Image 1 (spheres, helix red, strand yellow):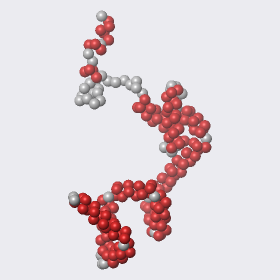
Image 2 (image 1 turned 60 degrees about the horizontal axis):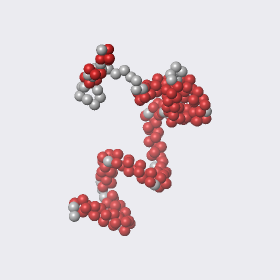
Image 3 (image 1 turned 60 degrees about the vertical axis):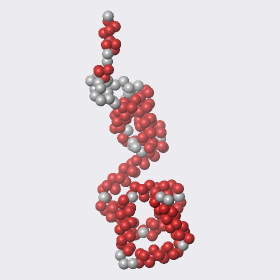
Image 4 (image 1 turned 45 degrees about the horizontal axis):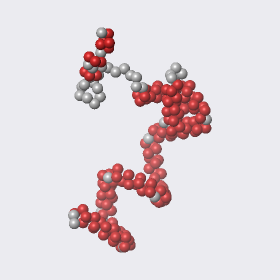
Length: 214
């Protein structure tokens, strides 16, 4: 038996013992924590463990909430009911220290929700505002693609109704970056995926336009 197997066997035995004797385990822990200095050392050890394994604990808690949403909600409610005064005091302190930042976040969240409600309430107005902001000189397929992206951004809360006109240039740049295949390329520029190989280095006499003049 390997060391890992022996360790797992011991853990399984301890789990089985705790399951068979929950009252004994509870009393034993109470006696242990009642010793002078034990509770403080335990709190310090728990804090070090949480700081060291913070990401793993967050992932485990998220997985637990997904698997057992009702139990997680009940546990959260019990904690809040038990520590209501402490939680409220902590929130008041955070608000006092970052009042301007919190108010700005609340105003931004309210504006985002209001924009989403406006877009859902009147899709025609959203479409009209988006198409009015996009230059009419562009080809229809480009306008349709950019308009679709902008309307989706508004409905998802990433873009607000009053910021449609200001964001047109950014959405056009994104479109050109993804879909525009007709760009000028420098023959002296290094080719991607090579070690300083230029496009001009790949040209031969067969590629010359002057060979057709003979």
